[in-house]
Length: 468
Image (cartoon, rainbow, N blue to C red; front, side, top):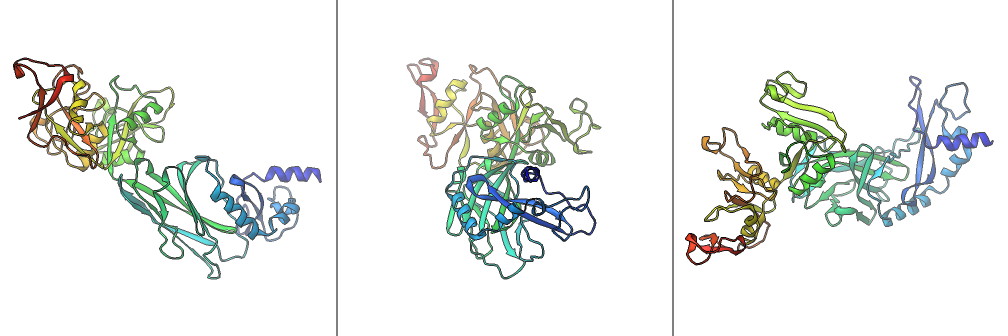
């Protein structure tokens, strides 16, 4: 039987075929093999028809039990002992990051009515940075004879269609969170059948889809939960000019400005909220798009193809681009600020080199672009005065549009990247939560020295707070 044994080994890693005969019953049979963390995985195969007889004709699909009786017999050896040992190893093993090409394990015997069923919330759940959210997931059995003891609960984050990151796993009293979810993730534990995950101190990176998997011995089921964040999408390009960023550089640029690359769904929602930008930028999935709410010829015209196109324009889509060679701008996303952004107006306009010292004297740092956008959108910061930001650009936020402040629509106005040596602006500062203000109201800023403003030291190093 050497030929059949080799063929059996080759068939173990093939996906289960779909039933090809109308009305035929499908039965899944399986065997075990060493898997990730040392546990035994259930190998899945399908047999068409009701019997377990050898193949009857050319082209008929055959299950592993017909070709490999020795493998099927091995699967029946002490499943309870193998189960306990396997998942004990899993809880003690450290994950190796995202797992690519993970195969979902499903094993349901023909005629059984006690399979586990997982239910999650339809749509999505919404939170914000720094918040606490519950990812809902419950499970039950189609037959009441099953116990909730010995059930394994596992949460993973879907990084892309073929990659998953471990978030949390529980088997009885043993619980473990992984990576940056340590100390933030725990089970809600609201009675039997509750597999909901509580996630605290939500970060921008938590945005995305999560899979809830419930496994009881040889039965399992999964459900999907999408976590969305309240926030704002903003376009970004560096001082070097437009269309200068590869995909990796765009990711880094967003992170440096207190954001992450926006998703296609977030960009589409921003377009519906009025975002109009005539320069293409990278999105999280590697595509390049841009939103046009006021159609015009330089931006693709009113008749160009796009998502949600119509009288109000649309989202123009360049598709998926070469992420290491092609260069575009970036569309970043940021969420609620834990601190506060404020404008600091010195007695005299200051160069960019003095902006950091000005904010530091108030217990703060120069605000990043994403922080200014978040303060404008979520804290309703409205200031008709341009100020320096951390990337060397000058911008100002407008909540209530007026003619002298840059147009009829709200938004964050940009003056680009002025000459850093020109003393034209104040500065927008960001103070983290709990940071004291060492210079309360009534203090201004300037240079001290003999002769006051008419003379004396104008070196930024000598710049100190002055009473006004």
